[in-house]
Image (tube, rainbow over all chains, first blue to last red; front, side, top):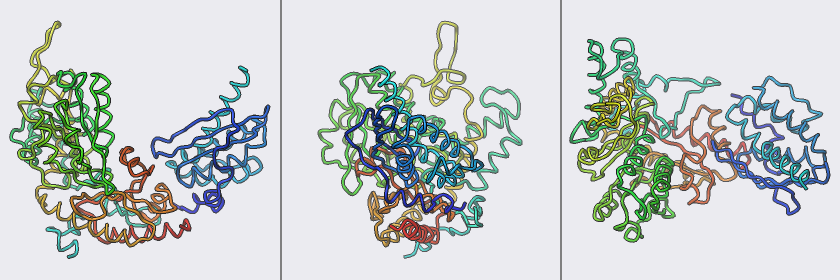
Length: 149
Length: 417
């Protein structure tokens, strides 16, 4: 196993200096997701401004892959529309579940392409997806709340 | 003294009995298997016994009138004799085969409730170092009965804190259930003290011996516990078989766990009477080939001698504790000296998450476990979410521990920690 394919420089950079980390007070919904197989945890808050994702703030405990993934998520969805964010989520999920056979689109995934190697390590796919699944959940709740309001 | 001098057998020769230890992994690296507390490897004799059973003696047990049925029954019941002898059980009828240690513990929790031995207002005492399988069944029993769960805490070193034993184990206590050897911290519980106190107030004592039977000489006839659970796959045997030992008079008073074939005396459409132990607790076709494999595992361990196995475990653990503490930024979670200590060492490496530690080690062919090791409350006690764990067994060498230390130094460098 080429462990360097997993730990791309970009991933280690995000791990050491995560973007947008910490929980901020302006938020619509908060979720807490756990990966029970390894114990990784994330508390994630979403703040919507109309259709735009105004902020994603988070407190995560976990390995480099899960932490870097939350950081990249923050980069990719904040300032974009919910719909655009969902497109990125779809693309990232497809890459993670592609067993290393999916060619990532750098225009959509930007730094997220660095996770292509993770797809070859089945045990780590859940680490990479943790923040994204939390985000999907939090956004869905936020959208529902706004519709109900 | 080196581990080689402390061990009463030739480790290199023993290693040749374990086919998987000759495996080479990606990059043509030799397997360094340091995850035996999770599951042990299997010697060729165990694998051969299982294969021979299926090739030549396969039949159902206890109900077949034919020759090979008799052979299968003899092999299955022979395994019970071997296990009984191995743990010093006064009677073979005190050995109940289960699926694993978890099932054995669930069986006990269920039937003690069904027997009315635990009810509203009663208390069950466990400890904070338990494996989840010795926590959850008791929580469930408390939910079913209205009993209260209480527990011993831990000292900063990672041993049971018995300072409040007199307020914890009282006349309200009906059951005390405790691990003999912690699968995470490695600490060995002071069973004699706990058992004496529990029996003084009339409580039953259940011992989770999953990490003890594989590495210590065990004699249930002098241990003092009422019920003891352990599993086959951590002691060279196959998966799918566990053991519940219980005092016969106690087992004989307890109701069945599951209903089905083999656990009955007679059945009419209206009612059923139950077989005596151990059959009462073994509904359905049992794990026959697994029992045969466990019997072969017991033979292997007995031939080495459990005193020798324990001596090797102690020596290799002492060596590893010393070597690991040479690493800057490594913190052992659990006793750092090989005193009253089993062969599982959990640790943190500053700045590197346990999953990343395990992944980097795996890239060098070194297998350790990372996570909470099914002991979340024990981790919470030390303010950590997860740890890396190296665990050793009768085939572990000093060179493998050295490979672990080199791998950890490499890991630190890799992550710039």
